[in-house]
Image (cartoon, rainbow, N blue to C red; front, side, top):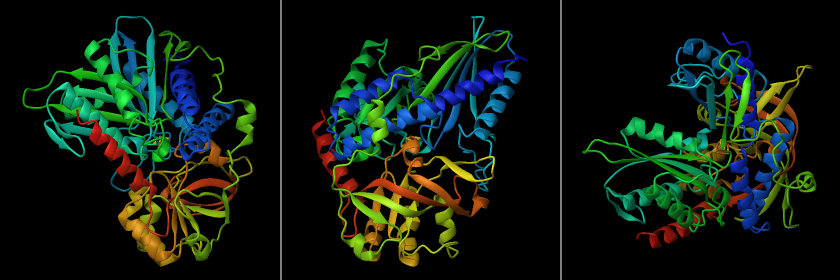
Length: 510
Ligand code: SF4
């Protein structure tokens, strides 16, 4: 038992969840500089940059989805892996208790949340031995929204807009571009991709995720893959998917490709898509005491270089004067006057609802009156203060498309006027918005600290039996910004960007 190992792991988890590493900050800084701040993409990036600084300053989670904790551990020969694994698990539970990780581990059959991020398969811990005397632990926290945009291709394949992808590096190029295009804003772009060429279906995905442990600014040691990485970065950023899929200059901040041998009969290309909230750090620890001897990916414990000046962070949402103020409950007339592209500032009461709430509402009456309401696709991080009051410490939007099978019916049945989330929704919801007189609002994915600051208080909670992320929270908000990306007249910005970026993709057929 190493006396300081548990504490070192709590430090590692806390820092990873709250403070982006310098290479990711540098890539995001470039993205902020390249986008006109007055555009939708520019506004989204300013909010993201503010959020990154706010999270580091308050030691709060950068995004409310603190993801699947994945540890890669290298140990000297003879180290007790059973004990190290136990302490990593204890550290995960402790970080969850402190609100640095959201309770994110649910029983796959019953849906019950374990409450402490422990359970079969959570956290993921991989061990490897090495011939050094110290221990190295690397951690990545990768959320569900971007995990859902991972892709695996079996070549040869026919791809939308790109035609046939053969068993060649040219075929691999097409797969990666196709994956970035398909992700649109659903994985909180701008994102980064880890890619594995070859392997089998299992090792391919694992190796793809391992590529995300490389820094964004390194150069691949294989010149063929280095060339391809460079090419992908150039081409993917012409697609104009843009921040959050709003269109814009930056769609991808990194592309890292590895290769594994394969069976002659198979040729898989596996792609692990990570969002802008690319949380990855590491430490080396003393094998006798467990104390941290060195931080990886960053210079010691020095504060990170801020993304923006303190004045810009304090200024909050960058307004243009064209924003529309909405106070919930909202009338149908107000909603019908909104068009795609309008920026709204929501005040009043907002109700959260994710997968469990939507499934529940299909069979049961809502626990609150939803007429005129804003239904927020959000699973916040919520903690109880010493006086037993709930406080939201992170509250960004979750991926909305998961609610597609339910949304139109819920709008019609209960009179909800605005659905807010990220990544947009499909044709059925678009038709439902038109019929019921409602809009879809796209909030900025991952901006959990920014949105937590728009919440004045937690007014109540229903359906707590679903666990904190899935419960229905009643939140009093003030000037919460979001963009109308699907209106009540049948227009969808998501459809438009997907179509236009598809036309660009077509030009990259090669
Ligand atoms: S930034 Fe978006 S994709 Fe990434 S973890 Fe947060 S919600 Fe998920």
